[in-house]
Structures are given as C-alpha cells and as structure tokens.
Image (cartoon, rainbow, N blue to C red; front, side, top):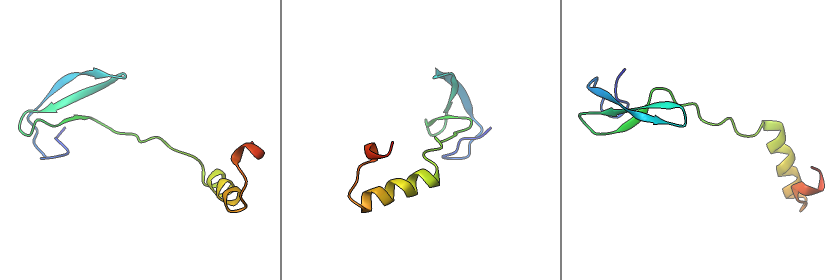
Length: 64
C-alpha cells in the first residue's frame, strides 16, 4: 500500500473510524483509508423526474 498524496510506502495504522482502518503517511503526514467508496447518490431516472418537476414549478412532495 502507498500514500495517495506522495506515493510513499512508509505508512502506519492510525486507528479506526466508522469501522474502517485509517492509515498515516510518515513522510507527508496525510491520513487516508485503503479504499474509498463514495456514496452512490440518486438514480438518473429519479434525478430526471425531479428536474421535470422543478421546470414545471412543482415540488417533489407533490408526487412522492
């Protein structure tokens, strides 16, 4: 494993947060996790439906 900032392999474990292991680069002092999975967000169909409602001046509570 290497630091995403500087590419160094000189890293150490730095506790856990929300069930994921944190790591600390000893060279640039950056803290990071091994893999980052960003939240998926809304589906494209739902976003399109919301945009249609917005253009027509309606709120999302009208439909949902």
